[in-house]
Image (tube, rainbow, N blue to C red; front, side):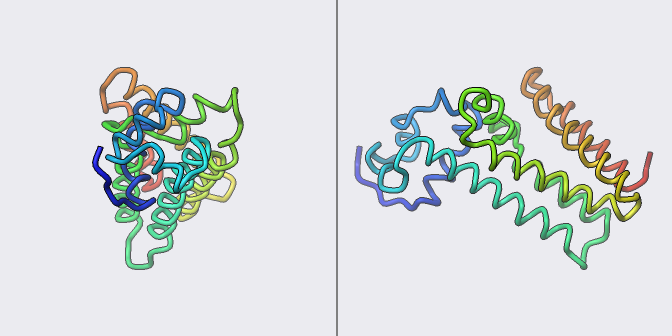
Length: 188
C-alpha cells in the first residue's frame, strides 16, 4: 500500500460511515486503515487503540451535531418553520440511512451492556438532542410539556431509524420526522 499523507480529521471522516454500517466489533483496525488508504500502524499515530478511535469518532459526531443543532436553534434570522427545516436537513446528514443510521444508537446498542466506555458521550448526545428539541418546543408549549414532547420525539426518531434499517424503507424515519414537524409547528 502506498504511503498517503492524511490528517486525523480525514481518517475520522472516512471511518464514520464504516462504523455506522458495520459497528464497532465488526470493524477491524486493518479494515478501517484500508478504507482510509493508510497503513494500520498509521492509526496508532493518532489513536493508541481502537477504543480511543471510537471515542474520538463519537466525540466528533457529537460535537458536529451539537454545534449545528444549537446554531439552528439560536439563529435569530430563521423563523420557526425554517429552523425545523434546517433541523430536518441536519438529521438527514447525521442519521443518513445509507450510512447505517445513528452511530450513537448503534454504538450504544452494541456496546453498552459489554463495555460502558462510550456511555457518557452517547448520553450527552441524546441529552443535547432532547434539550435542543425542547428549546424549539418552548415557543408553543410549557416547559413541562416541552421536555415530555422532546423525549418522545427523540424516541420516535430513533425508532424510525431502527425500523428503516430493519425494513430498508425510509418511510419510518420520514414519518417520525413529519410527526416532529407537526408537533413543533402546531399542525396537529
